[in-house]
Structures are given as structure tokens and as C-alpha cells.
Length: 367
Image (spheres, rainbow, N blue to C red):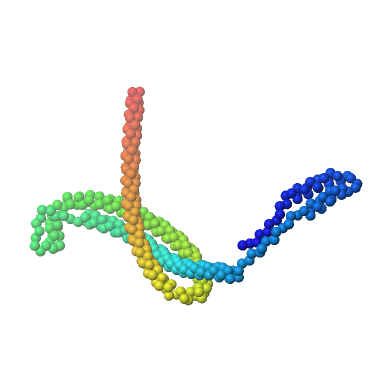
């Protein structure tokens, strides 16, 4: 126990000293000193009560040593517990860092594969559109050829087929029929040829215009796609470079930190490697299972997204085609209405002119 010293009460002495000082301040104007007050102060100061001396209490050396040993034991046990906890925490942190590195590598790999698949999909789509346009042009050409072949063909009806017919026999029949009906055939053939020529010219002009419009649209679409692809590639390259630089810096920093930590831990963790290896194996198996599950989920999500994108694009293409067809029909109807209105106006103007001329002639005749 600590040593305590008690002091005597000083309240009475202090009060007396204060009264005497006040009296002295009041009588300072006197020339002769007041002997009674000085004596009183000396007597009061010498009136301190006697102090009692207490026995000193001391501790034993054995008790002190025992208490110190107990404290040292408690401190050593707490330090050992803290060191074990710190080593376990550091091992878990290193494992978490390794898992994060593995996750980053997998994410980068998946992102690269996604970009490659996206590029291939865009290329295939552009090729499909080009092939679709080429197929349309071929269909129009085939239709034109069929129409021209029909105009040049002949049909013979109500004539029985003979066995072993050839071109010569058919030509002989046609010549005989033509000799009998020369005049009618010539007149009809001339009118038909004129009509066919007119129809051919109109169709050729329409086909040329359609082909020119298609070629212009195809060129414009190709130029737009090329520009968009260039811009996308530039952006992707920039983003890839930035990501690579960031990943390199992060990896360098992580590698430096890991090396420093490994050098420090190698001295401390020689005895604990067996236990850590067992825990690492179990955790690695868990991480492998988790990675496999994540990869499966990512693949399923990719397939779902691809299907959704395909369905959306098909719907958009259908809506675009329907809108284009509606616009074409509306334009054709407008052109027809305009032509009809022009014809009606021309007829009305002619009627007005005829009525005006008749009125003028009637007036002249009356005069």
C-alpha cells in the first residue's frame, strides 16, 4: 500500500494570521512599532501541534518477485496468443489476395473472349446482309429472264402429242399454221412486239433505277459500318491499353508487396507450414469449385444474352421492313392522287376554254 502522510489542520492558524495582517495594515501610520502584535504573531507561529510519527509499512521481496513473475506469465501468454492470431490473419489475407488475382485473370480472359466473339458476330452479320442484297438482285434478274422468255415463247393448244416429237416436226406444224394464217399472225405479231418493247423498256428503266438505288444504299451502309468499326476498334484498343497498364502496375505493386511479406514470413512460418498446407489445399479445392461454378454461370448468361440480342435484332429488322413498305405504299398513293388531280384540272381547264370560246362565238354571231 502507498505511504500516506497527514498534515495538522491549519484553519485556525490561517484565520489568526489574516486578522493580524489586517490590524497591521490599519496601524501603519504609527511611528513606533507595536510590540504586542509582533509577539503575538511569533507565539502563534510557534504554536504548531505535535506530529505523530507512524510506522513504515514495507512489502516483502518474495511477494514482489511472485507478482512480477505472474505478470510476466500473463504478458507472455497474451503475446503468444496475439502472435498466433496475427499469423492466422496474415495467412488468410495472402490467400484472399491470391484468390483476387485469380479472379482478375479469369475476368480479363472472359472479357477478351467476349470481344472476339462480338467482332466475329459483327463480321458475320455484315456478310449476311451483303449476301441478302446479292440474292435479291439475282431474284430480280431471274424474274426478268422469265418474263422475256414468256414473250418469245409459243403455245400450241388442242393438238395431240405424237410419239418421237422433235424440233423439226414442231417447226413444220408452226410453218403450216403460219402459211394459212399469215395476215393475222403478222398484224398480231407487230402489235405484240411494239407492246413488248414498250414494256421491256419500262421494266429495264425501273430495274436500272432500283439497282442504282440499291448500290447507293449498299455503299452508304458499308461506309457507315466501316467508320463505326474503326471507331469501335480505336475505343477498344484504348480501353485495353489502359486496362493492361493498370493491371501491370497493380501486379507489380502486388508482387513487390508479396515479396516483402514472403521474406518476412519465411523466418516466422517454418514450423507452421504443414498446417497451412492442409488448410491451403482445402481452400484451393473450394476456390476451384467456386471458379467452375462461376464459369458455368457466366457461359449460361452469355448464351441467354446472345439469344435475347438475336431476337431483338430480328424484331427491329421486321419493324424496319414494315415501315419501309408502308412509306413506299404511301408515296405511290400520293403520286397516283397527284396525277389524277392534274388530269382533272386539265379537263376542267379545257372545258372552261371551250365554253369561253362558244360564248365569244355566240356574241359575235348575235352582232
